Image 1: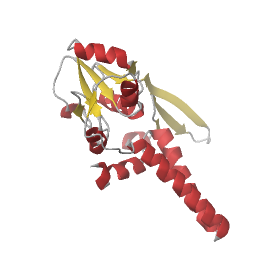
Image 2: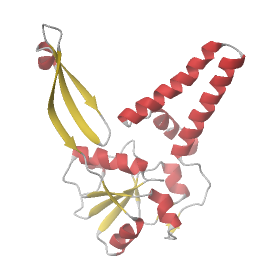
Image 3: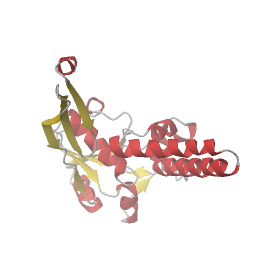
Image 4: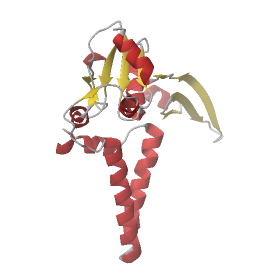
Length: 212
């Protein structure tokens, strides 16, 4: 980066399913020029729960749950290993030549986990189970766990943000307009999560005692 900067370039990164790198150079005439130096599309393979079940029954795949420990303990797909999204990496997985099936509650965290693993090793044969645990359960397939009723962490995030926006909006209207900045804070957090796939609130809630 220091070499690029010395040449007048700045590197910008845009996350998400497609990874793009741009070099931006401002020349002496203050004209901005773009050079796309590297681009690839990270293809995430999604499979239906019926396909996942068949592969598992045929011993063609291993199963990984990327939800939080409390979610896994409450209910999980039988035979799945727990590797939360925040800590999953290739080195944490047992070496295998089988297909690697990833699931979360609804499929969103599973997709992110696949992106993380493929970014480390694009030769991995990894699949995201479409619809996650909820789709598996709705299909009537076997699950196990304590049966404890726990709100999934993605819904905890939605609830926290919704309450935050509501409270700060009311305070801004009834007490002091400055409180409206609190709503803007939550909005900025959502924009950041949408652009980068990183959500600080999710990581914070994952550390709460009820999610352990």
